[in-house]
Length: 486
Image (cartoon, rainbow, N blue to C red; front, side, top):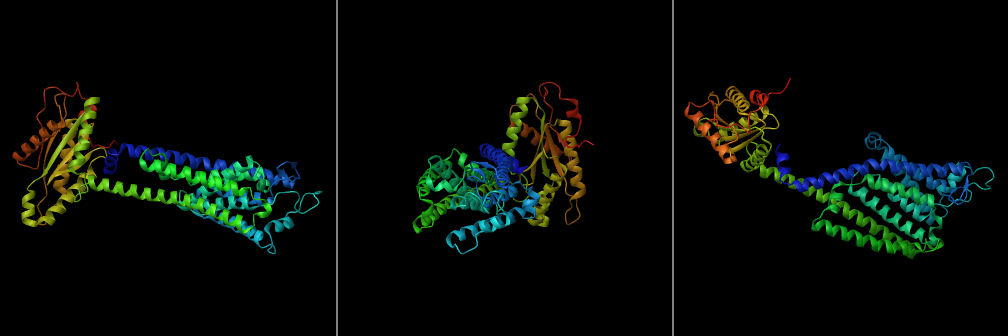
């Protein structure tokens, strides 16, 4: 209840969070769909290779190497696994780790030719179709661009969803795939070793990885209209624009020159910069989430009475005013109950303030256990409590107050054995009630009447002449406010 009231004072903030959560959950639902499409592309390429399909870009005529498509298919399968299997049994991380090891093996083979290449091993294990004339026919080898793309995607799957680690690698893969698409459109020569099928499968897997790592806090930061959101959007645009420009220039390097020190260093720097940007945004998202948790905690502390855990006077005043205006606008019943612990000063004097504090905490806990969730009980000051009962007429308020009085009398006792009792005054908003202050004053008058009448009793405030916009519905007037239907 207190969390709900704290959020009501931050309507704009919670609406932004809800929109970000809706976007994040929508992306998460779309992730397996994109992964399935990537799996379909990989499967089509593998089938084309197996049946010697002679189509440009597929099968044995300039198509991707089976090693590339097998890695892509494994990553796609890892993404479409049910969460219980993928995360509960760490199967998704195991598949991603195995694919990363194979890609690293292939990358080491580029630097050290004597090392057995996994593509050659695959050629021996998977013979070429009849008539192809070679173990691995005219297919495109898995080059550096494909290795980087699949490697970054695999690394993004090794951590849990919505993590800064996974988001950084997914953003790196997205940046690289954008560069490849631009380079392919411009006819960059080094992309002759990256087929359209490879780019398509990698692009679909990258989108699926981004959907999986769609952090609500990051989305909220990027969509924010504040200064922080503006700075982050500008930083992201300028940083990625510069990196994409450099990456496209690097892609103009001839395939035979990829292993030269200059292109390797430039490529490594670009990839590191991409990962750095992704990591920065991931850490910013984590920091923002932590800040939001601290803000919520501060909101709760500022709206809660430290001793009893109930709403404090400021929070209760704000809630009561909003409830009063709503009841006036919609002509609905509203009642308040003012509660005062009898002889509390004597309790402090005779038993000490620590016993008095324990009594207040026990009373608060007892009241909370009895009242329905829609009722708001607060510590109004000292030993006084205020109970706000929306959608409750005077008869229901009197029934609730009497139940509280009886429960208190039979549940909480002082060290000397005396029962703790309370006096309660009830008041209902009527058509003649013009303000919340007037309603609380009437409840306070009823409370003093209960005190003067001998204490440990419930008293109603004098009923004003006109009711609340006509007759109060019978079921509201007669049924106790906190009665739970059977």
